[in-house]
Length: 397
Ligand code: FAS
Ligand code: PHB
Image 1 (cartoon, helix red, strand yellow):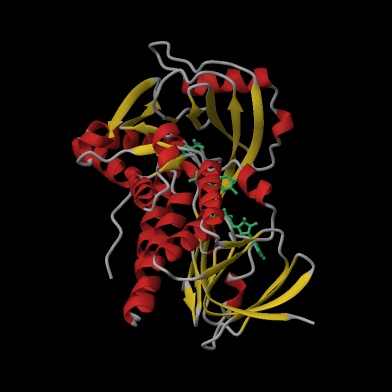
Image 2: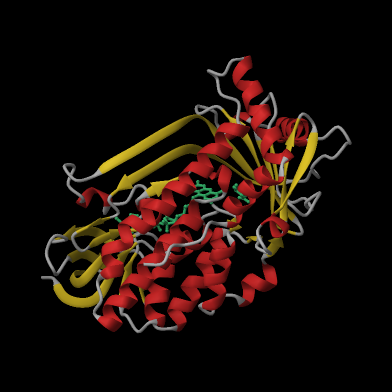
């Protein structure tokens, strides 16, 4: 016995993409239901991205989610690149007419979005199971799922797959239609959270002959750090001493800057991948966020590309529901994909420039150092880095 129900937009996945889409649709009077496999606690506890582009900060602020973000987020007007033991600052605000990035953990964004959806009586169905997708090529897609021990059949006008890289929605696009682009890198990142006051207030991306390292932070008391490691490496292979020794060598400068050391409270390994699927629409199914694309985190683009997909899609749905105009829905795939590919390019470029590759010979390393010299040594080069890092503009329909 299944209970038939209906909504305007069904969203699968309560990560940043699904939650933000539901919130923006609500503000435009469009009804949605979010179906999420995991618990609320699980979704709020996932430690992932840390950097918000200017456009992500703007949409959260403009849509009423800026209070804690402005109070607890760390606004950065620059970041540093270290190589040959020297530091090079990229002055984001000077190079982009005042834009910046904000360090604010993805889990904080998710907490703010969930709290607001609940406050607005939004339907976010955590702990859903047996989720399946049907009829996406008709004008009434349908989702079957179990929630609270009851089986439901949810019909909708549009279905949006915000279910991440391992979700079910991408698979609804026939293999005769779907094209995928995939690059798995020959290394991973070992990330740690440490109870240590950040030794400086801006992020550092470091190229070193021993491998890449990244210095970031979560608060005035918590430092976030990453080291490049082998794909088959494991967090337990890295003692605290080995980690701090490696981080100090790779991030340290000739003038003596080193990160502060403290108790490590979280360790985890993240593989590195570039992935895109096209199209991001099939029939009445749309894909947004990691369901459609993955980037190596070197460019801090993952969550931000999910946000920009959702900004475009929410504008398209507003155009349809308020004015009966389908132009935005028809243009979503082209506009979203064009910005995704530019995010993929920047993430691939930062990854290629900063990491050691097993197949690299001395010539490759000189090319990396020449790239780093060029991009930090000229206004044109620094501007190219800065405008990508703060986030490229989103096209209008
Ligand atoms: P998400 O994966 O966040 O959310 C998808 C949701 O769908 C999940 O809650 C999942 O439970 C749910 N779901 C899946 N299948 C379902 C089903 N069948 N039914 C119902 N629900 C289903 N990005 C950065 O910018 N910087 C970083 O440092 C960074 N680090 C990362 C580290 C890790 C380990 C990972 C995995 C990703 C990292 N990312 C990083 C990228 C990450 O932030 C993503 O870009 C971001 O989570 C994308 O958000 P969503 O598209 O909403 O997908
Ligand atoms: C983080 O703070 O987790 C972070 C910052 C910048 C990146 C990736 C991760 O490029």
